[in-house]
Length: 128
Image (cartoon, rainbow, N blue to C red; front, side):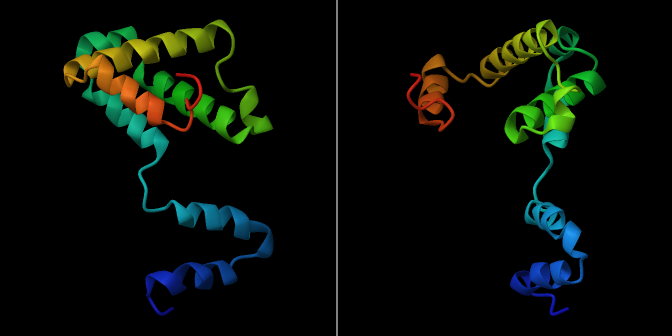
């Protein structure tokens, strides 16, 4: 291997069985980023004890958030049954919104600043 950033990925992929290349390519593409699961764990840990008590146990909260996000984002049939649904999904959303509200307050982020970010988000364009 040449060790160069541009040549490493194609070289690794060329040595991989064809049936696994697409999967490995995606893993390598994002390998330098922190996983969603790690980010959610960190966010949970950064919250004061009273906020953590509003949420489920850390392991369950992290699992529910990541599974729900992955199910909704990737439309993966194998994730559909494991993601919260109905009342469980409502509780997760409610707890997440309460936590987000507290985080905004904790870091003194104004409602106006939140609105500006939401309006710029591609997920909400046209809704605000």
